[in-house]
Image 1 (tube, rainbow, N blue to C red):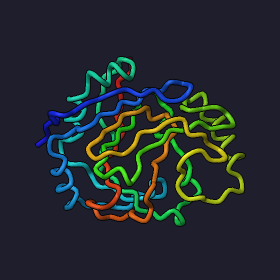
Image 2: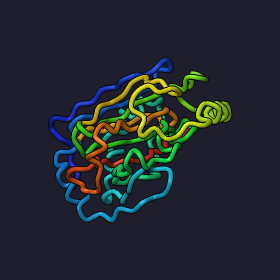
Image 3: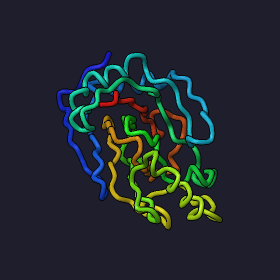
Amino acid sequence: MYRISQDIAWRVDYVGAERSPVLVIDNLCADPAALLTAAETAHFIDIGPTYPGVRAPAPAGYGDWVLKVFERQLREVFGGAAPWGFDLCAFSMVTTPPDALSALQSLPHFDGAEPTRLAFLHYLCDEAHGGTSFYRQMSTGFERLSPDRLGNYLDHLRVDSNGLESQGYTVGTSAIFERIGGVEAQFNRAVFYPGSLLHSGDILAPQRLSENVHTGRLTINGFVVLEPV
């Protein structure tokens, strides 16, 4: 079912003062329309307060295929560790209007403080929906989290955000976070980056948010676990 496109191309961007690697892959699948077809019949559900939208399981075998195709690049870019597997791989759609976000949902976030976790995104929407930006916490200078940094980060976040109400989706530098780089959305573009890197989706067209897989902000996203080196 899955084949790489003949036009596939990849590059590595380095973002911020900490030079965090971001692997960007254009024209990933030879037939991305097949993924849209699969999404049409997927069962999307609200997964709770952390994610402002709905998710459904990705098609069987998709995650294993991605890791098989890019095992060499993942080793080269992210320090030699082999990809062990996905602990989440799902169709995802941001659907929450900006004025309905919780304060937590409106801030940049990280997907784990451990160094063995990567975040993965495969854009199945157009560029008008916006890509992903990466951030630095101004009060600490942290761009990536680690177990040693986590307590300090959270302490400063509580102080910095005290009294702040949700301002909608973060798009660009705010009073608390500075934008340090990003990746634009492009249909059939995939991205890997450290899960510890502070990030937020660029929701550029909130009026277009919906659960329609053809017009909404459809992605496949997941978390890749790396074997410790």
